[in-house]
Amino acid sequence: MTRRDGPVRRALRMAAMGAGVTGSYLGYMAQSAFLSGDQRAVRLKRAHTRAARRMSDELQALRGPAMKLGQALSLQHGVLPDEMLAELATLQMRAPGMHPALVRAQFTGSMGREPEQVFRSFETTPFAAASLGQVHRATLKNGEPAAVKIQYPGIRDAIKNDFTWFRAISKPAQLSRHLPPDVMDELEAQILAECDYEREAKNIAFFRKGLAPLPFVELPVAHRAYSTDRVLTMSMVRGAHLDDFLARRPSQALRDRVGERLFELFYFQILELHALHADPHWGNYLFGSDGTIGLVDFGCVKYFQAPFVANMRKVFLYAGSRESAHFRQILEERYATSGTRLSRAAVRALARISVEFYGRVYPADPATDGIPFDFADDAVIRDYLRESTRVGRARATLPEYVFLGRAESGLYQTLHRLRARVHTSAIVRKYLR
Image (cartoon, rainbow, N blue to C red; front, side, top):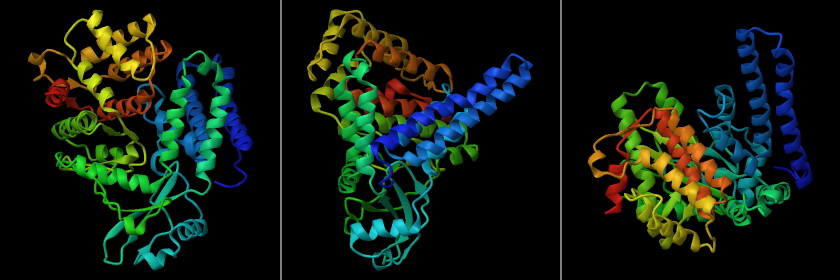
């Protein structure tokens, strides 16, 4: 990030990116009528790749919320073309890093000491770079390997500038309540909170204690003595990223075990901790050959109020009719906590997703608990996105849904990639008791 990346310049770059993506397809559209079926397929793949590369390059350069959008898009298997997913996947871990001189300046400016004065060794080339900062390998004075996350300069201002632009271009959607202002506020507040590495260190400590009952989860240790609000030093976490894990051709039994554990981790966080690791892109998960799950990057954490979780407990595995007055009352109680009144369209959309998606993936009848749900089915992702879109169009979105829905979508996408078979209802029922 530089001083030249002001709000106007960033807005112009985003607009230019949109025009560039459109241009990637114009040549294909002009030629498609004169091509055979096979030729059209080849040219379309090339157009997808060009468009995605343009998006990836620009989003990497812009960092911040723009890059987070690209990371979210990279999870959309079954929705976006494979060529786009392959390009956008680079945003998860392999964005271009800062110049070594800038790394040193950022570290020294925050810590008050050079890296070599703090660590036995420090690599100026990052091994992971993402939307708000990048991560370097280091060795503590006692010989322990460590991961050092260093924030990009000017990232806080970039986030504020981006949201000023987002609010300006989305004004019609805000006025119509299709994108409520409080949802936009929630997004900005959470992403700005990710810039506070002292807060992230506290999140790590909270989750290390809270997730202790799940022995298959591994989390880093935050070394507070070597950290500030812009530098975070942590222990290393073992495991392979999803693509590498799948490249080893794990057995169906192992994929099912990992899938069940991911699923349990998700619902344990919501129902037991009332908090959620809400940055689900695959760069933040590490998988072991023994079925362990390493979880990193605790900048984006959503904490839920007790009344919201209590209401969700009433809805999960609801056995009655979704058309009943009782079910509507439960929904109205949830929305009343944020001062929102449900319209008839919103009630219909919420009842529909409860039947068409959740009722199928999470059968309420305990007699079915022994039957796993197969996430290999492509329809799972399509159905979830279709019904979630209906909820949004019905103006039934709450601030809590922003990161809850993001994490839930990431869960389903990962389970789909694993082709895992999961005892969904049995796991949820375990934490409803």
